[in-house]
Image 1 (cartoon, rainbow, N blue to C red):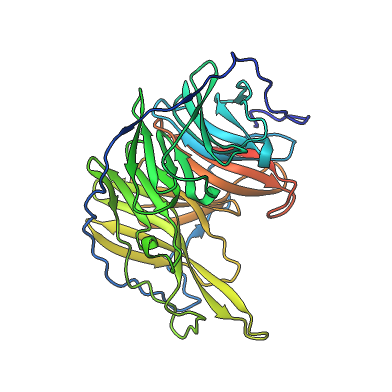
Image 2: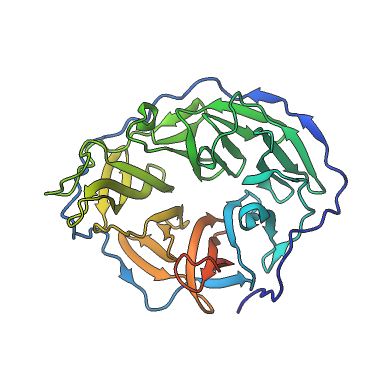
Amino acid sequence: MLAACATGRPAPPASTAAPATTASSKLDVLTDRLGPPLTTNTGTCPSPGRNVDQLRPATLPRSTWRLAWTEAEEGQLAEATVTPDGALWALRGSGRTQWPAQWTGSSWKQLPALPLGEDLLVRLGAASADRAWVIVESAAATYVLSTWDGRAWRSEQVDLGVQAVSGEELAAQGAWVLLGDRSMRWSGTAWQTAPLHSYSYKLSGSTDEPWVIASSDPDAEQARIQLSRWTDRGWQAVPLPDGMLLPPGTEAVHPDKPWTRIAGVARTGPAEFWVAGTYSWGEHEPVDQEDVTISRSVVMRNAAGRWSCWWGPVGDQSDPFVDMVPDGRGGLWAATGSGMLWHLSDGRWTRERAPVDQGVPEITDLAASPGGEIYALGGIGSEQWAQDARPALWLLEP
């Protein structure tokens, strides 16, 4: 049963809050150093034959998830973050008509409107049900941090010493915000800064154990450090396996420049974590000899510093992983953009399609709650990647 189903177009909430204040933020220094790299075995992780599927998921006939909410109007849910007190925040809408919302358990709580004007809302983070923030790119190409204090939005200028950059170099989740090549964390009373290894595009994990995912551009020297985790001594580089080789017999356009795009990280034990992503390279199309991108999914496990890899089959139109979270029982959930939910439990993969009332599911984010609930956010379209997608929230109860 759906918790809510709207029949009219939802408008961004009207402003009913007190006028927002604007001030320059004072940033404290959390650390000015990078932590020592994690010691790992970066041995080879060769890609098997093109048709080999080492993941071998069993497809379940019925989903264990339920469609908790959707509405009739077009849009999506994205930028999911769950706070330590269990509050789920997300962005609703699309393009320039996005706005932050908080899940009540049956519907999305209406908040007063953000004082955006011509500015563009780009990222959302939160520390609790009463403390959230959005990063806004202003018309003057500066970043403004608007903070929800439980009653109203308060806007302040944020200066991390960088100019406004593309959304690929911005991220927010939990109490952390990434902006350019620096990070900042909300301590409960102030913002504290710490340097990153390189420009980063995504945060994974939780407020207590965040992971930073950086660009995989093979031409960028700093992109060699794609994964970092937070320690009390700063961001710690996590070296990925060195020998992620092309499949046997592959004739790549640039065989020395394949790239890996990480989708998410999940810790499943004190000395074990998993990384999901997509490994890609360029080839010449057999008939026209045009350059095409070939990809295959890869899942990497680090247990006590040693890497192991499992590969999916090769495809030029692969369905890549988009996110990954722990399941709270020593396993994990991963999602693909086409609405497939993968579960790893006791060393066995299963997968199931997110249920829909009608149409085709699309997933953008996963989020795990301290209470054991796991959320999948995205939309439902008339067909895959359709422009008429409507927002949707799926729930897996503990």
